[in-house]
Length: 252
Ligand SMILES: [Zn+2]
Image (cartoon, rainbow, N blue to C red; front, side):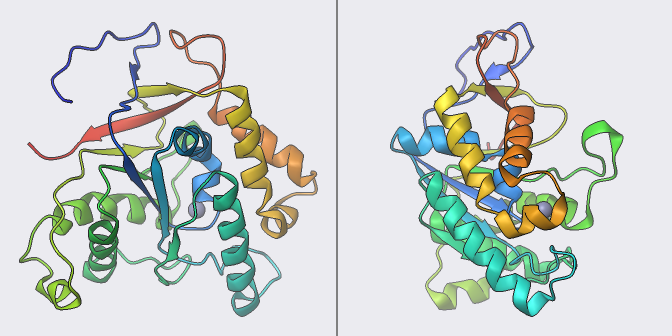
C-alpha cells in the first residue's frame, strides 16, 4: 500500500509498514543485525514473515588477539546461531575482507546479486552516513556498506549495469519498496513486545566469543544493555519497547 495517510505520533514517528512479506537484512559484519535490528526481526518472523541475512564479510578482523583465520569461522558460527534465535535460517556471507570493504563495482555487484537472489520488498541495513550516535564518526565498513546497499538496490533492478549476472540466471528485481536504516534520525517506529526484547538479547548473546573479547562485563549484561538501548519506548507508541528506523521509499 502506498499513499495512505498515516498520522504522526507524539514522537513525530510514523508506524513502520507491515504490508510486506519478505525482508533482507544486508549488513557488514556478524553482530551488526543483533546490535540494532534483531528485536524487529524476532517480531516479524513470529508473525510469519520471511527474513534473511546477507553479510558482506565474515567479521574475521573483529576479535582482538584472535587471528583472522581462526576468528572468521568462530564469528560465522556465532552469526548462524544468533540468526536462528530470531527465526532466521538463511544466512549468507559474501566473503569481502573485514575492515577493508571497498566502495565500488565489486561490492555493488555482489549486493545486487544478493538482492536479486532473495527478492525482498524491504531491505534493512546500516547507517550510511559519516556520523553515528553521539556524533561519533561512523566506521568505514558501515558507511561503505550502507551507501553501497542504496546503489545496489538500483543496480538489482537494471538488466544492463551488471549483465554478467544474467549468465548465472539472475533476473532483475525491482520489487524493493523500502530501505530501512538504523540511524540517529529515525522516521518510523515499530512497537515490540517484551518477549521479542528477550529473544533479541539471547540472539546477541550468541556472539559470545566476540563479546567476551570486547568487555569484561558478562556477555548477557552487554547484550541486554545494547538491546534495551535500541528498544527504548517512543512517545506515541505506548509505554513498552519500540524500535525505530529511518525509512527510505524506493522507486516511483
Ligand atoms: Zn559492524
